[in-house]
Amino acid sequence: MPFIDFGGTRCHLSVGGPDRVIVDENGVRHKFEMHPYAGPILLNADGDPAKRQPSAKASFWNVTTWWIQQGGNIDANGLCVWKKPKEPKLLHLGGRHYKIINDTGEQP
Image (cartoon, rainbow, N blue to C red; front, side):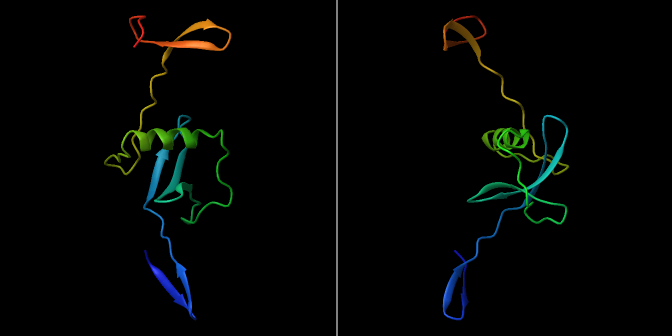
């Protein structure tokens, strides 16, 4: 880990990852940094961390999570490549109880 000495005080300097661009489900482009410790951080036009990060319900978090889970692939244009996962088929058993079933209607 890189440490810097400031007048006898040691500081840790944590540098973020490379800038990435991802297009969310609504077609909105987001420029972000994939920090090795903090995860994705939305960037402003200057490449600095945005003062306001997306809310917890923003689609940015879904698409970056899917991108990470699917291997963090980048296409030839430098865009993050992701696919929306298939929703599992559920059989309602009653109340709040469900069972996951496969395409043939059988239990996995």
